Length: 125
Ligand SMILES: [Zn+2]
Image 1 (cartoon, helix red, strand yellow):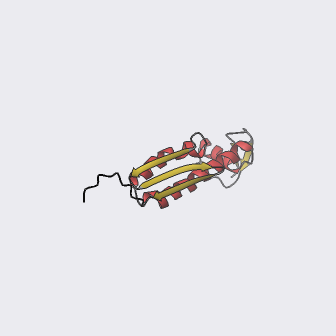
Image 2 (spheres, helix red, strand yellow):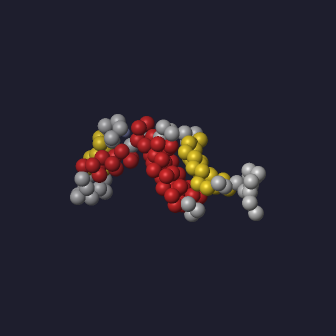
Image 3 (tube, protein in one colour):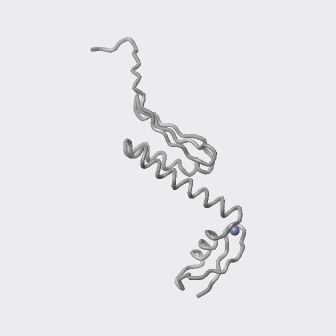
């Protein structure tokens, strides 16, 4: 059956095919938005992709070593992806740092292990 949905951004009405009869209007609007090529819809798709890739990188790079740091990054991922926060850095331990930084269209996740030993002069052996 053929039905219609409205793009959330440009309000353009699209004809949708192969949509289940039980789909709600919101679901139809989501499909219409997903199929639309207007600037708002494209921007939203790019943002979602950025968030998905960032989440994958957090899982691969941070969660394998430090689940708490990964949880902090996950909660900060959206504002970083949206460009409202440039960077989040976590000093997890004396020698382990994590950073999540927006660089252009990408989110760069890094884990840095510093092996340098700082002598403070009163180490007891
Ligand atoms: Zn649109």
